[in-house]
Length: 359
Ligand SMILES: C[S@@+](CC[C@H](N)C(=O)[O-])C[C@H]1O[C@@H](n2cnc3c(N)ncnc32)[C@H](O)[C@@H]1O
Image 1 (cartoon, rainbow, N blue to C red):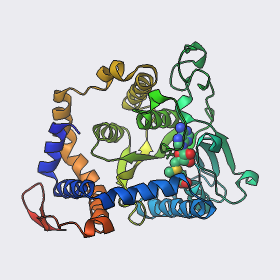
Image 2: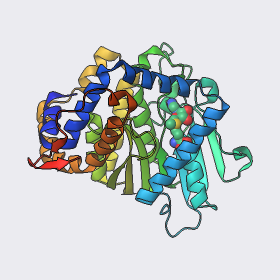
Image 3: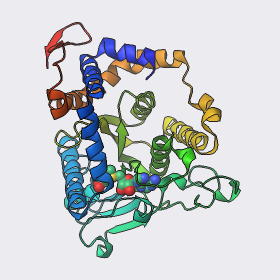
């Protein structure tokens, strides 16, 4: 993490300081490693029962998301049959939560093929449900969508046989779009993708989403660590053409750094939205066509840009991110693998204004 950014957050957010302490403690315990290793193994080798349990969990996350933000319930207000696009759809929790609220709604889905390491759809009888239409594909390989015609890509590229010129659901307009795909460890992919797959996945979904969302529609985007520089920039970008809220389930995955950016009243034709679209395409192209050394300059962030963003957006960002840090810190503090470790020196956390707040 960039030093300027880290220092700014440590100085101005007691919750971020607390979370940083707890994470440091977690890294020191072998129990912590074992805990996460066990979870990874379970999700990589899920049997039928565990796959069902994971589906139930994603349904619960969809319900909690709506309890807190109403983003599902309000989709397509005024229409009696709203349209949703669900990327990274499997196992199907968000789709189920959406259709339960809008029984006459329509869902288009995109998900990684199970034979390539993607999850299975667990929604009962989804194949015969006329409200659901799903395409299995790798959303990071939609070259034409990302501004590079697949036909022009060199046959020497490691993914040359896999790029697609498809532009799924391009002629449809959606009231709500989920960008919920997450990198799968079971997904066998070319080595060049190892260092930048999360960025390729996020940018691909955002490009697809912004070109299909209707004016005033909503986006739900899965992200990790609000404090990552690229996330701060992304959240700031969305504040320029939508209303932004950050959501983290309290009941599930609280211990992880994952969270959702919920953007409502999105204006996809706003000048800043169009600029963002070209920036995401350029990032995807750098991550897909340049090797690690060559892409470095594209991802370099000059210090003055960091200072300037923190000056203008820092306090608002901390206000948005605090509930996420607070939830993760509380979950970490209650984790069995930290229970045995020493308690943090400060039970009281000092907030940015120097006040002491009981956690
Ligand atoms: C955490 S799950 C999403 C859960 C889903 N939102 C729900 O409500 O059930 C992540 C999903 O992303 C999919 N995925 C991962 N990489 C992908 C890719 N490159 N293209 C499309 N889907 C992808 C996985 O197969 C998996 O279905």
